[in-house]
Image 1 (cartoon, helix red, strand yellow):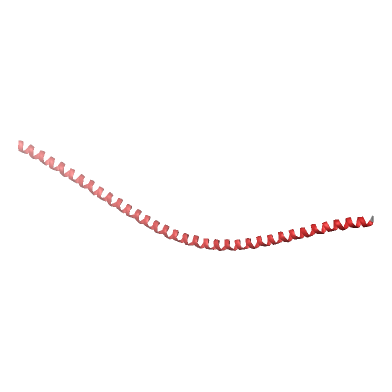
Image 2 (cartoon, helix red, strand yellow; image 1 turned 135 degrees about the horizontal axis):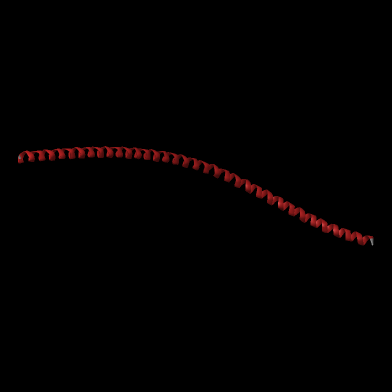
Length: 125
């Protein structure tokens, strides 16, 4: 009877040993997989850091180009606004001179008309 229990115990012990070995192998496999994943992630992180650094450099260059082009565009716009202002001023001056000349011409025309009427009156007398 004891022998029977001993055999049963040894059989269960053997099965438990097999299960323990299987669990140890699975654990080793999981650890190896985790370590490989960690290495892969570190490589990816390094690559991402390199790409981020490169991107920041490109962004900085783009920013400088944009600033430069924007500054030139602002200067050109200011120059055009100044030119437009000058042309408006000149146009106003020409218009003012034209109005003055028109008034002067009209005044002279009225003077000539009055003189003509005066002479006609003198001639009729």
